[in-house]
Length: 85
Image 1 (cartoon, helix red, strand yellow):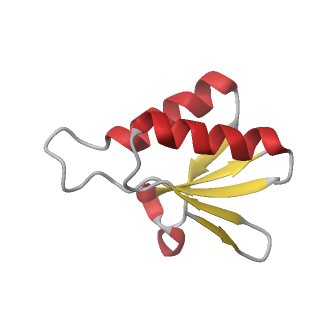
Image 2 (tube, rainbow, N blue to C red):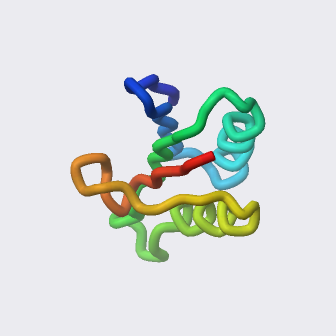
Image 3 (cartoon, helix red, strand yellow):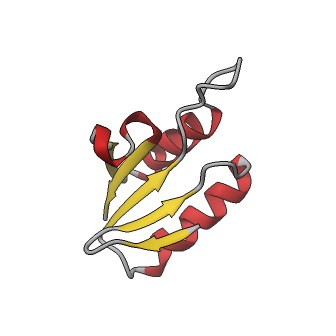
């Protein structure tokens, strides 16, 4: 679930429910320990109803006013978010 990169804290939420993912992400955001998170949500390619977790997390970040963008392809592309605090 957690992986420390050099300057980026990688948080893999792929496979979690939306409520579990929100709780884990909120804990990281509230900790004040990180300035840059790479949040792995997956792209939702295998789902007939689309990327539920990715949509949920991006909406949550927007509501909280937190700056983010999709990762570069080599860092996960549309299945990962770069979050800046």
